[in-house]
Each structure stands twice: as structure tokens, then as C-alpha cells.
Amino acid sequence: MTLKNKILIALLVAILIITGIILLFFLKPKLSGLTATETECLDDLFLAQAQNYIPEKFTDLTSVKAWCADCLKNNGVITWSQNLGPFCNLKTADAGKLCQTSSECQGICIAQNTLAKTGRCSALEKVSGCGLVMESGVIEAKCFD
Image (cartoon, rainbow, N blue to C red; front, side, top):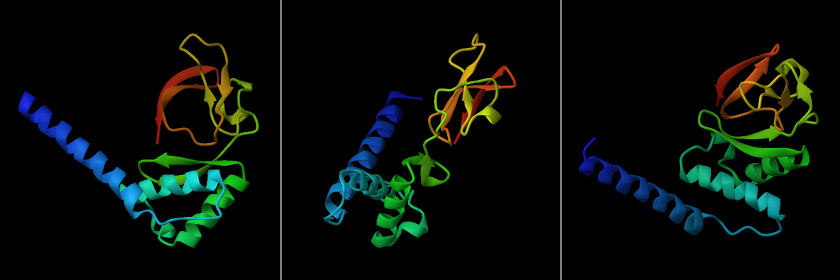
């Protein structure tokens, strides 16, 4: 890749980021009577909308507020998936518990390194990104979306 192409790509990325920020701050409706956590949830969803990740069910502000409140009430965290967009990811009750396989966890069994003899249960039900997962005492590198 030539230097000219690298510069062009960097400029395009910068333009996309600036456009997203402008949409986030100037087009977001003013909200009142929300807790800080609800506002954070809505900020995340408006950013998703600016990036065209927002599912159809979130086109109405009332339904977005209800969804955010319901997620937070159920001990959830707003999480992003490239394929799913925003979703409510529930915290696990067994986070950090020692495990040998994911069936022992509400989420998955995560190994700290390739030499680990045991793993620990994930903090969230759904995990994104890549890492080491322990299944039946065997460590596997896996990626999740």
C-alpha cells in the first residue's frame, strides 16, 4: 500500500469519526428525568444510530428508554456486537468462579494463559472478541461476536 493510499484511508476514517461526533452531539434530542445510567445507555444507542448499527426496534425514543431501563433493572450491561448491534448482556452470578469447562458457568470458562490448569467464569453471559476458552480442561483460542 502506498503512502498516498494510507493518507487517504486515514482521512476517510477521520471524516467518519467527526461525522459520528457531530451527529451524536447535534442531532441527539434533549432528554430530561433520566438517571445517569439511563442517559449513558441512550448515548450509546444514539451513537449506534449515527453509525447505522441501530436495529429497527429502537426507532421510537419511548421504546429505547423502556429497553434501557429494563436492561439495567435486570442487572444488564449494554454491549455491542458487529452483527447484532446493541443488546442487553446480563452479568453472571458466578463471575470469577474456578471452572474446567463453560457448562460450569453462566457465561464461558476463560483461561488466563495457555498453561492454566483451570479457568474462571466470565463476568457477562455473552463474550465478544478473542481469547482463551477452557473446555473440558483443554484450552482453545476462540473468537466471539
